[in-house]
Image 1 (tube, rainbow, N blue to C red):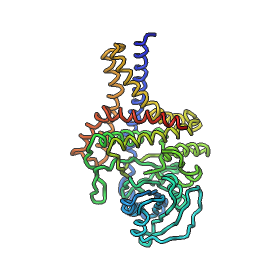
Image 2: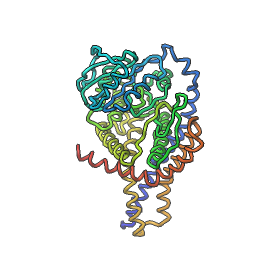
Image 3: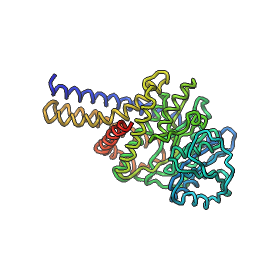
Image 4: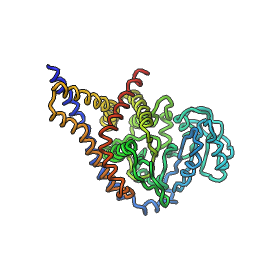
Length: 452
């Protein structure tokens, strides 16, 4: 076989790979439409108001780990204490901060030491003290030795008193009715073991009458990330609801049962993405227990996150995430394609492995091979155009579709300016930003592999 034939065959195989991948993502986005409709039918405000103050709602512990957060520890704790929910607590863990984080919390909330009446289900770094607030009875503050975010979350889970928990971070801003919306699936279906929600970018957002309203997206880095969020973390995750195999990340905006976290030994400290790892281990544990779980994602805007606005920050975050995903997949490789774990093992986990590991490498290899093939005359200009349409054009169409669905279904989207800008960013994201992300993710695989 000639070199030209090998180049053409390799490019054809890569093109078919991306056509198949994008077609499946289109299928997920299509399934998001009936999922949206079914949620809106039961998510009327009157429904939530009728539940407030009743015994139907499960009590919830909101756990947050803070480290060197003196600038926003107090205001963040205040936002959590202002959530609209009849019975919940806020557990703030000061993870050995070297600044005035704990001192400011102590001053703002008039903290006083209480006996450590805690059952330690997960071993953590020593906790120096437990504190209650004289002004906010819902608040419990832990001051512990530094052990990292995962260790702090484990300490918070030990100290929490309610069966349902939500682990979050200081970069998350919740809507006041977030807990009400997250608990709804638990009330409607007894097979639900965890509920997640989609995160929206909070950069440029403003608060009006206690509600968060999106602002105009500015800058190509932030705009491209916003397109990514709408396409991958909103519409496609809703589509996975219909498949019956949604991967829950016990962190940020996922409501889960503490007993499951204890059964798994808590969050791992030796991994970059402990939430992702714990999500996979949770699926394994439930399958081993003979539990056929439901882990739905709700579409309501319950939480917002601040995205990094510089390319360097995005690069570091993507490499760290890639290291964690690779480690988690390697630790649980026996689940890949295994029918014992249902649709999660047969479809969801292999899909995540393909998207995280194979897609970025194949994309970069494809661009290189295409240039070589064009220079050597191995393929025609028409083939090159078809290849780029499949690899880039199809992705742009998926982004546009997700943006249009977002504009049509979420009432607080700013139709006066943000939607046209997002449509423009859908092109920018595919022509430049995406290639950089593929490079960051692909190069992150090799150090992670050699370090093991």
